[in-house]
Amino acid sequence: MAGHSENISRSELWGGDGSPFRISYGKQWMWMFLVSDALTFGGLLTAYGFARHSAPSWPIGEETFNAMPFLGSGYPLLYVALMTFILIVSSVTMVLAVEAAHRLDKKGVIKWLFLTVIGGFFFVGSQAWEWYHFIHGSHFGSILTSQGWAVVDINEANEMILRMGRGLTIVGAEATTLYENATASMQGANLIENEYAPLVPQYANFFFFITGFHGFHVFSGVVFNLIILINVVKGVYDKRGHYEMVEKVGLYWHFVDLVWVFVFTFFYLL
Amino acid sequence: MERDDLVQDHKYSISANHDEAHGVEIRKKIWKVTGILTLITVVEVLIGAFIKQYDETGGDNALWPYVKIGFLVLTVVKAAYIVLVFMHLGDERKSFKWVILAPYILFILYLIFICLTESSYWHEVFQGADSINP
View 1 (tube, each protein chain N blue to C red):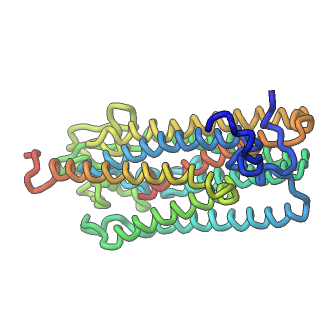
View 2 (cartoon, rainbow over the protein chains, first blue to last red):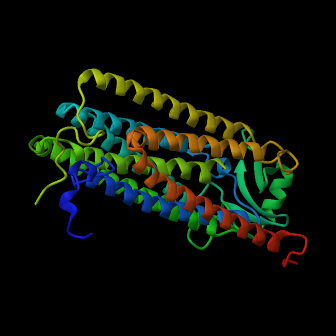
View 3 (cartoon, rainbow over the protein chains, first blue to last red):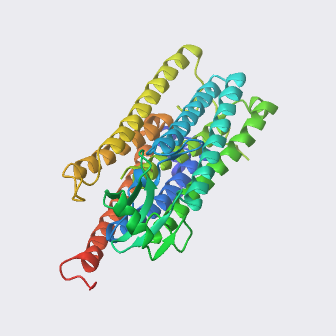
């Protein structure tokens, strides 16, 4: 019956004291936000899978992404592996910042959070280079030959090599003949056409949208980390008695790393 | 107004502060997981660099479907370490852990299933025996 709740012992009731999940309001809703954000990324990556699975052909990751800054091409997947490593390391420094925060070790939090911000900047910078290189295109671009589209490259012996797709190549004199009789060419990538997959323009669209959306998340994460770092230095959390804000931005930062693990697999490895 | 961002009396197990001795233990676990994540990434790149999707004649490499599954398994292992250890979801209450994980896993599996089914159909339309392409 209504109105008799005072007869029930408080020990049987939740009583509104603390959260049933034993987690603070802020952290709980950071998790809720991350779930919804993960659904957005899940939707994007599934749409990518849809396009890829129904497309006639798709470029090979280690052929498209084989360049290193200052060193040129011929380093399949190495640069993106380095980027992945940088992001994992910055995730580690973030956990260490959270661990230091639990000991109320202000100096430790400042050190590890600072390193996390540096790692974040390195990653955003790497992604900017990756985009620059993707838009600018490979050294020679792609040509339309009588045998279909081909990506032009040169091998160690300085001979022309045409990548015809499905890992097939044409080398030497035959390649030169095809090159001289090419009827069309393109270099680089934009939202309308791209040299990596001349027959599937949506390849570049997915690349720009998914890595761009992720890069925007990384950039926001760096800004959040920077704001919290400034607060830590100013002693805001000492006054509050706990460093839970470090833990909350930490959750966001690990999420960014988590998404990259999937982008790395679906865009570069598979 | 009562503030619930103030952590009192070790009410929240994760937010509770810990001492240096406990910290040593936690840091050990963090470095162990760092090693595992790095190792998995190195293995993935090596597999990607040495096992090709197609053979010399442009045919499908018979190994590739297994490599693909291998990549997916390694990715999920990495993701699990990040979520359960770095994000501490493994240390949260069981009820909270499943409130976060169960809806997501269910929905995403469903999404992957319908998208793969539908794109297989379109692949058949464009490239199959009765393709609409001339």
